[in-house]
Length: 130
Image (cartoon, rainbow, N blue to C red):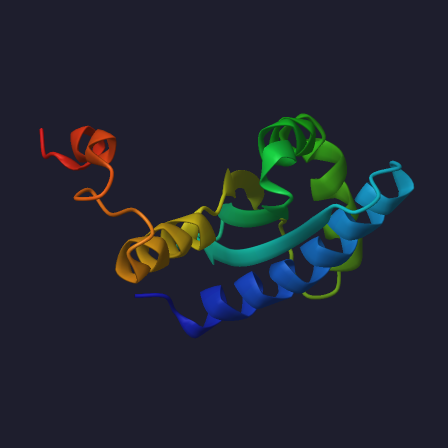
């Protein structure tokens, strides 16, 4: 369970990360790309922050994640400058793709019956348990 301090730091980092990443994307010439920080979780010792990103459109998610992880020191420095009065030490950042929206979409399609294995037997092979 997260302490109040962890929750406050995670919220602070989430707000500032949104600003930093969106500004970097717009200055980098990426038009029509939306980067949102869905969740930030901080470890108990406040040394590591796990950042979950949702990137739209999904086809560019992997390339953008590689670019973000390669610029991790610059992002960390920018965050440290923004939070210098609230934090003594800036946690190291780890970035992950948040695929929960894709998972929800697959569940909705299955419930609506768009992937009906009775009508399309080719789908049955994918649904079998291994």
